[in-house]
Length: 243
Image (cartoon, rainbow, N blue to C red):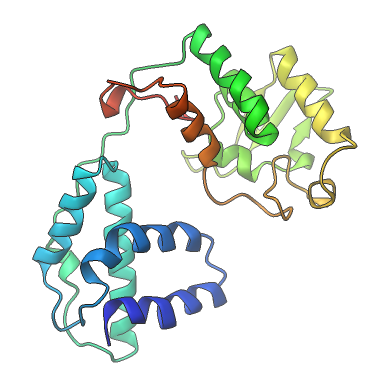
């Protein structure tokens, strides 16, 4: 059985059954980076050098070390399921591939001019991304924290929000110190023009169907790219939603 066929017909359906939240991300990594190398190969044919090729291709394409690490993790997970299903008895070749060094520390931030350009354009393209960007800029909240944020955690009167499942693994209180964040939350809470799914959702910034957003909205990335804010800038100095 080719690796690609097993991923599509066995691994992915099983993850959907298990309710795994990262399916979209894993599918994208498979389609763009894993399948071109391993898709037609059988488990007996795959060697560490093929995974090194995936890593090299992703580096050449400008993918972040964290994304490469995630792609290798997907291969490990698929291989583990193939072992459980008796499709192969070979040890996972990913164990012999060195993970890329991850350094996500950034030392560039939005200038007031860049922030104004970004927000003006986001307001035209995606109101929900615009609102999330405002809150992230003014409170320091990460995208994942905002995606999980529910209305019971928001106290507009006290001007605070309780952020849970933070990157540090604990909960913390963020203070809504700016007028524009307070006004934005009041608007979202009572906005008559919201889609029906958003109105019924417990999430402050829900996905289109009212559920929790699972992936960082690509609108922000495309907007930064279209505004050419990262032209001629190396990866460590590029702006992103988390800058």
